[in-house]
Amino acid sequence: MKFALIAAIWLIAAIAVGGAGALQGLAPPIPQIIIAGLTLALLMAWRISEVFKRWVQTIDLRALMAVHLTRFVGIYFLYLSATGELPRSFAIPAGCGDIGVATAAGVLLLCWSRLRRKRLWVGLWNAAGLLDILGVVVSAAGHALADRTSMAALLHLPLSLLPTFLVPLIIASHIFIFTRLRKSQRLVGQDAQSTDGGRWPALR
Image 1: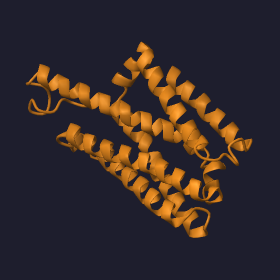
Image 2 (image 1 turned 90 degrees about the vertical axis):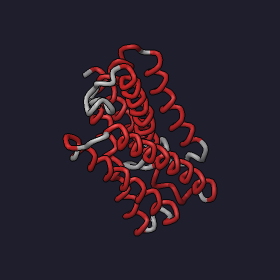
Image 3 (image 1 turned 180 degrees about the vertical axis):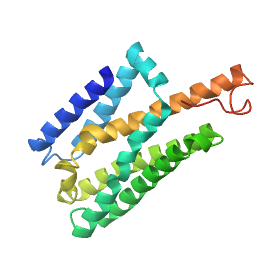
């Protein structure tokens, strides 16, 4: 509950910053520095705080995966490319990639109880999702360097929540999921008779 409250306060602050127009006119690499700084802050908190680390290791893995359903924001990218508010060369690859990752997350969550070899499928999805979001960040930076005005929509609400809230949360959650998968693999070595035929431990 405490960490949910912290996340809510962070989200409210990000909305306030975006609503005040504080991000408008920022040139690269400032937005990318914001993303990197917030992501690093999350990861540092995870490394330093035993309470936070324990929470990350015990929360239902499906909750971490459900965060990525927000990546259906890719649909909005496609809409903005159609209206000319985002360049097609950015919005179509970024939008389709995010939609694909969100859809795959949804399928995994819906099929969770029937899914065999969970660790394998979640690991593949997680790796693809991390590569996708990093590619989106790099692509946005490249387009902004070429033409700052072409990416202006990302610095206005609602998309200003991407650099100030959602993207750092998504990147950090990918790291958290990898640590959960690594921990589950260690458990396999410690107990060959674990759930799922002794090969794949039950993932929470």
